[in-house]
Length: 79
Image (cartoon, rainbow, N blue to C red; front, side):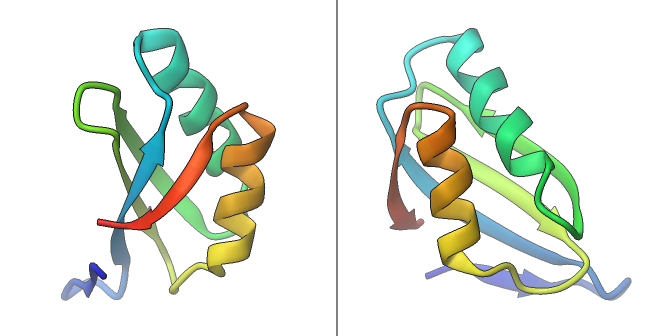
């Protein structure tokens, strides 16, 4: 499981998401996760299934799972 705290106090976490296959998928997942309180940036990559999230504090995995589900995909866990 990957979660790093950088020197500025933000936390970077990489998640694995199943089912993304295109830019539209990336946008849907990024859009839903970006609505979680405390998230400052989201980068989804369909080719790897990885979603990198930067937040002010560690996120609740269930909140991330719910956001990914809302986008129509499945959270496979942390990378």
